[in-house]
Image 1: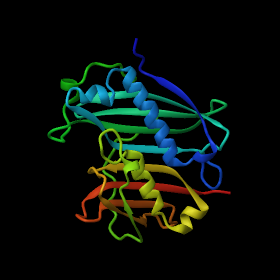
Image 2: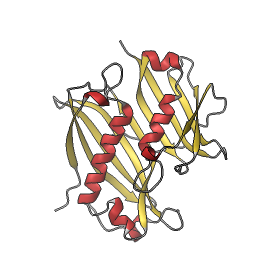
Image 3: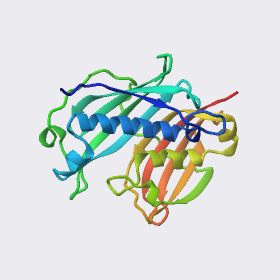
Length: 249
């Protein structure tokens, strides 16, 4: 019988940590995606399930808030569940626990089911089978539109690699986080870590594209950053991010 909550424990390995020995945010997002995918399979609404009906899942928003990142050799438990299934979007939330069972972070995500032909979202109740919900939020967020980055202070050009692609043949959502964080000013990246990451996905990126990752400080202390990721050829905005950083000892 399908259960509205799934829990998975990950052993953090040396190649998954940063230069300070802490779990990389992009790796954590990949962990979350793995658990969400496993749960969707159990619930009968995996990407492969949807593809047989001419649909696929795409993430529209993610908001991650961390108290601390675990280190190499530690364990992290990820719990996930679908919260809502209304209109065009389904919300899926996450609790993140350390090896002692203490809550060290939380996340909320919003997903749409995309028609593979029209590339437009469909109404979920009309096209998806029933699956159980757990109407509890791990992280409250109404998913208001993220601010626009107007005057970038840093600019980084990157190619889309084959390794960036997923089952949908477009760039995997975790890659956008890496692109955004990579453009953070060196003065921030060297002495701080991102404890909050918000991403709004606005368009798809494909192999052969080149992207530009732009960044600027939103706050006076320079620890809240706005990001814009765009297609270098067309200027089309493919993702918008906001990150909040804190100094590390």
